[in-house]
Image (tube, rainbow, N blue to C red; front, side, top):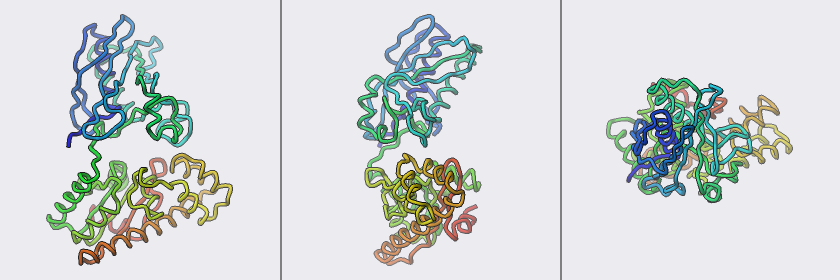
Length: 374
């Protein structure tokens, strides 16, 4: 299946082309950028409009074989010199949402252009500025015609992002999300590891979990397998292939769902994040008022912040209880799968974290198991 490119990659490519045209005075019909994943993104540059003071152009969003609602949209960028010499300033224009509630990637009041796309835009604009020895400030405004209407088909309104879509992406590429293809790919990766003689395996839903292991423990992420949202299906494969031990690491926003027995963590399959966070907070000693505040949060990290404001001991207590229940549900899933395949049940351990506080909870044998891989 064919990969696509994120709205963040499109914005960065359009920004690079626009600033090149602004500083060179020449039209640019194609542009290429390096994505964080190391994949080159080459694309046509559309809708070019130039004046002496500014340049506007667009790049067409191509989601590849992923059924993304933004595929086919034009991501526009306008660049202009600013006389404040304030570096590279990034703004959201029409069709790009504004953050109205805390707990998201950007603070309240900022355009919903996430930090990785912002870094990509800055790096590519700075590269062109260096080429032309331009040392004055540049203002970059990203806009998406029709973004307001399109956002209504996304989770943005529920998350507190109003007025348009988000400019997102952590790797710069969009990997196809065909469920059967993804599950088969996960199985193939696991089977390869098993056939190489490995009896232990580390799994993580995505890049956040792998990056956490690398930064916190020095773990070689190439030794892990990304399981996406398919926790249950991955555990079935782990048991069926005869692994002896499995360690799951991931962000609390995904893993907290497992404490409620949810084994496919995609939002379309089930959420209950805030309900589960509130339940474990109550078990750890929170009162009804605190539980209600947690239920009003839009992200697990916002809920963690609320709990910390109540009692610094609340988060460890709540997360420890959540982890115990996660292990219970995953162990039960492994037991059923092992029985079905006639295998010995693997040992399951887990580490859960968030992007602000780092490690939130670890099962009893998680770090000892991880040491086997280091």
